[in-house]
Image 1 (cartoon, rainbow, N blue to C red):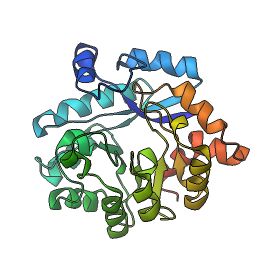
Image 2 (cartoon, rainbow, N blue to C red; image 1 turned 135 degrees about the horizontal axis):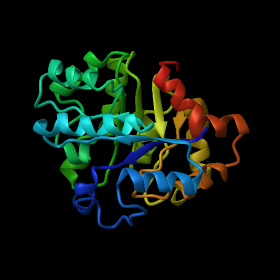
Image 3 (cartoon, one colour; image 1 turned 135 degrees about the vertical axis):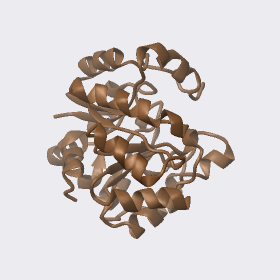
Image 4 (cartoon, rainbow, N blue to C red; image 1 turned 60 degrees about the vertical axis):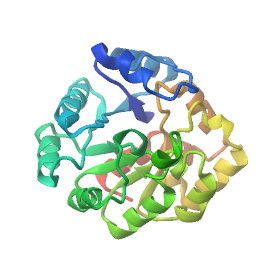
Length: 263
């Protein structure tokens, strides 16, 4: 089973507006709607996808999570959103109301640092109940880039060893040197493969080295749709020439273990 763990989608009425605020240098490969995602999955051979919700404002958390719950009702996996402008109890209550077992954090768009004390309180409260997938690295201005760094991820997963966390972009978008120094080999950390516009832009030897040092059983496939084409990203993973077991795990099995809380 192939599961794309990194897909952005919005309600039809706001998808175009939401995408217009994304990085202009990244070409779109889709329209950011659930129906558009379904079409991309069909064309690329993806069996299921994780729809990610992101709210940059506390007052939009409930609505974003309702949309994620809608996606889940249509058969997708869903990771919702939290915001430190709400209390820990309020954030957890909204997630539990909708049966959401994971959250997406995005340091570039949400405006808070991952090591903000209010966010650290959320990590502590998540325990092993709520999984996290987090953007790590660059993609914005200098201040935004420094809100989610590989060093921060290391601090989080060592402080909260029960937390189930996947670090996007091999743990550091355009900060691979830092990611390799800080994150490789940490047992309770998963790395995610997206690198828009394509993972194929990274030296394959380096990708193989990262996977080998970290452990192929703790790497999960994500495309970052609609900023990348899932079919091209799957092809880049298969072209690495890893064992069949390692490739199958990255493309889906490892995510299932992550959600089951098995390292």
